[in-house]
Length: 430
Image (cartoon, rainbow, N blue to C red):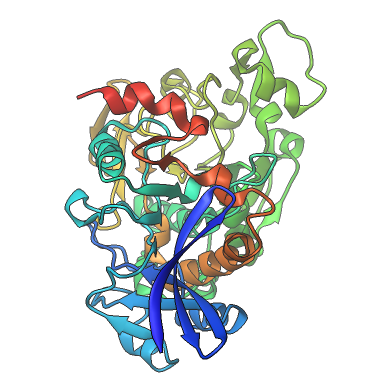
């Protein structure tokens, strides 16, 4: 048997293969590596569960898959080994690596291809050195956030699970703030169903919950609300009616923004095209809602949603904010920091614009954990792997016919790709 390297190009995605020759039969093998998560605090999620990796190998026999041994991963090494998947301490011979969170610079292997959340596409200052190192090491980076379809709609992510855990945490915070109940942390439970079971055991007063967002995050939060059998009402009824039971409303951008010129917008597209022509009128909801669950996407140039003036107003009723989207110093005034899974709640005092203990009588209780899916690592990993198998893996084997890999590629040959050239000034800074 003769082993040697061959080179193959799939559109803009360049891959090395090992070609093994058995007599006159040649088999091309693609080498994928599942890396160990090294970011602190630890993250137990993984791109592929053992079952999804087995499915990958069954559907694509010309793929070699290796899993880097990990003591923290939610799926133990033996769960992979028992399905015949190789687990090793050294997987540096792989060509394409799949991970979840940022990789420490010292662990990046030059001249490889990586898929992970780099958190650089918004020019996040704390990760500039990471992107600089990726370019210096001639690494091809495919950020999970940049995996989009032809209409720039994201195809994979953990947003649904952020919404699920964030909504649970919002109710947990409400119970703690008003000394009504103290349910376990989500990270101690196993699944979405476990979260719902715990929540359904609690007796809620006739509170009102307002939820923003209809994307994966917002719809994930809605799964919890619906699982609890809470009554959903229209925005108009939410604002104007009194209920004897807890209710919620799910609102869109035109429900909490209005044109400055007073003209009524015909559709959301006007807001997305001209966000500078709008101002928030979320105060309609802050005057009647008890809990605000923020699951929206906030685009550049869009007006702030929940302002300090709204929170400081005498008729503000919101006392618990679950900011699932967690844009620090962004559209939600009380999100002055990201909280942590270990310490998820803090108090915000609007009249002084500062953090205080959440037990402070004048404070708004805030939950702004920025890695919520980590609290439900098994469910989140299963859902992520399913999406990756559906939307990404086929591109490796079909000539990238839909341009999935081409659009997602951020770096190549030691520089940014044209699609991400807007990051050049960010990369050039010291």
